[in-house]
Length: 194
Image (cartoon, rainbow, N blue to C red; front, side, top):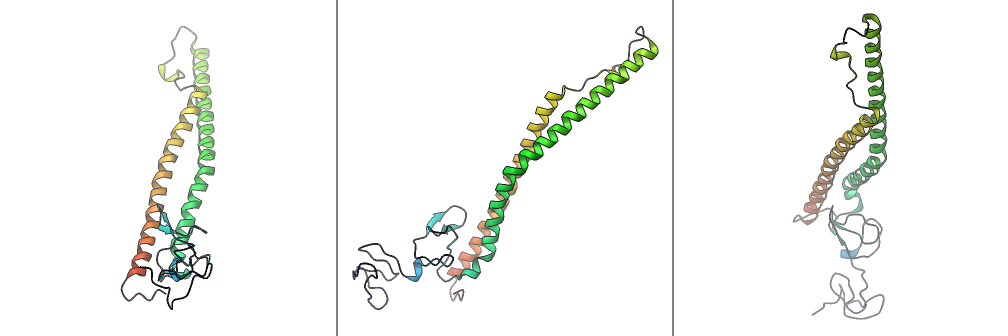
């Protein structure tokens, strides 16, 4: 059945003797053992499943990959998680701004090219007269500025979204690989990570 925690101590919350060797009270659910101690926030909580790192603290949300790992061992994985979160926040701000600026530039350039082609056409007609048909190279064939604006907005948005997804996947893979390395270090026989 349930064994007493370490030296047979009763639960510090309810006083029950029904405690596990990991430091969990079966009567009231209190947690106090080292298996439940979060190295980041110092609270005794049960780890929850995390799709990015495997397990995280239910209180602070930081990764918990092994009882034997001290807080200092999590430095690289925390940095990578922070960078991945910043990447998402930056993209939400920068991608619309970059798409809008690029679309305005393309629409302005289209307006300029169309005006320049129309001016060249008018100069040709003024010099040669209306009897001589202008060459087709002087006909304004560029799309209308609103069409160019929307097309550029969509193109930059689609390319930016592709970059966002690709880089985001690479960042998640880096976080997962670092978490796997830490977990392997914590579960290795003779680990001195504690």
